[in-house]
Image (cartoon, rainbow over all chains, first blue to last red):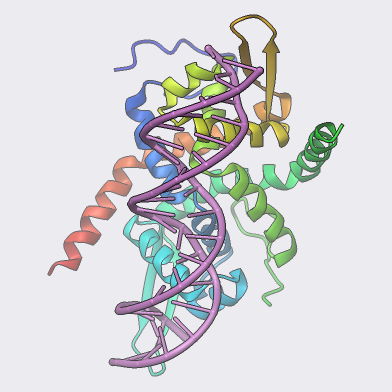
Length: 131
Length: 131
DNA sequence: CTGTATCCAGGACGATACTG
DNA sequence: CAGTATCGTCCTGGATACAG
């Protein structure tokens, strides 16, 4: 029931009245944490196995397990168990996960493009503090 | 050490070897927390004052203060103090902040568009658990 | 109004050990 | 190899009180 969001000159989404805001906040905090993003990122390149991701990301078993399970529950990641011995489990993105990759990549690209902008800002800010 | 990333059909960024990964992770965890995103989001609509944001976002003074300071340090948010009494402080996005809005909006839009996809996945997943 | 300082509860997260 | 369980720690973040 947002009544009117007029159109901004730039790409403002039609969201401001608390309601949806909360939902977005929810999804974002679910999927917006450090590890979720990194996992999505990695999986965007292709299938990976459990320990492979563990090594690659430098994440603890615990967090990897928890985060993967959450992402699977949210339908972003697909888990495939090969009942061999020793067991082998493949993780991939689902279609939903892949669709999520685009905004994630957008953020990653922005981060990459603006690393030094940010570093410069920080340096300037810190310098200004110790006058 | 998977070295080859061939060219994906979709928009995979040229990042995988730990190095940059770490930097991205850093920026993302800095700016990827719940409040930073929400603040950027709100400020994308225009100038806001301290208490205005506080009420609007339902955030504690402490976190608002901390997050704003961090965002200012990173050069995403501009703080303008009007030396009146009582004091009035305006917060706006900088150019860098505005450029960051786009990926943020992209994420927000995705979240909005896929809320029910996620809800459905969760329901299905939870149902499958209690067989 | 715009903050800073303090305290404190709860969650995030890593380390370690153990199972299938 | 792929996890689960347990424990301890640190940090996040809210509530509250106080200051300019």
